[in-house]
Image (cartoon, rainbow, N blue to C red; front, side):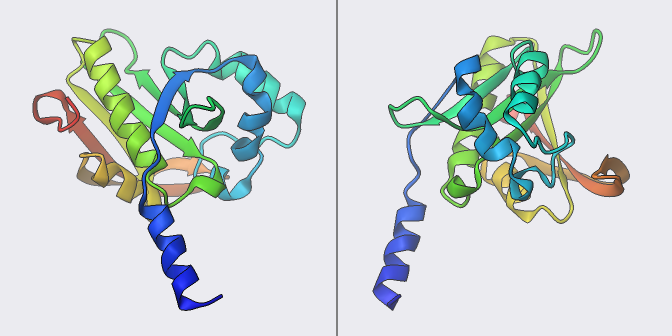
Length: 187
């Protein structure tokens, strides 16, 4: 591959595709499998990698469909999901805060898809949930790509949380990020 081809590939990746967010449907299972069965995508996830279509269907029915705010990340007009973004309200009466998370299919890494989805989701939940003041996220210390997504989306790094989560059977340090509605760049 010549230098020109590499530069062309880099330029193509810099162009952020137009994304939409929509609720999932069961018919999205084949697209969901693209990232839910990929260890490269799921290695930083709290949930295990799916290994079969039946596992993906079960996860969609039991977790994604009833989730309070989980959206398919779709590119352009074809409506096919290339990832997901979810926002979970804090438990109990803590209506002023929520947590955001995201997964994007490997083929769409490095194209700005996750950043665009996180920005769009943050804007939507601040609008839909008027009492929401704080949106937070955690990223594993070694997950530089997700950390960068959050930073580009306007989240601020707050702290390193030692041994905060167990991922894949191993205790991990996490970095806490937050986006406040009062100083949100997405509003």
